[in-house]
Length: 106
Image (cartoon, rainbow, N blue to C red; front, side):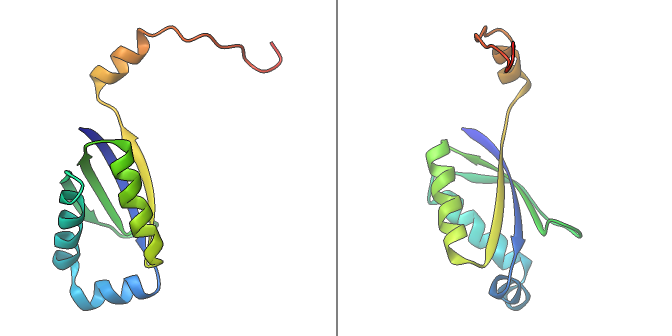
């Protein structure tokens, strides 16, 4: 499974819905959404400041995460920023690869 950091901000009716339904209800809705794509929540936190919500999720693949993000974005009530998270072992594997690259102007 791939791991993702999801940063969300409630906008307009989304903020009103959060006030009406409460945080626990929204967590339950996110759990059901992720489970519908074979995923799960590792951690779920609301926050003060620039970002309203931080979720670390396990999702089977990038296509499933993209489907989730597209669906949420289509509601107009939440904006998302999604970051793929890598394990130390994945970075070790990447460090052993030898891509070929020429920097601009070189």
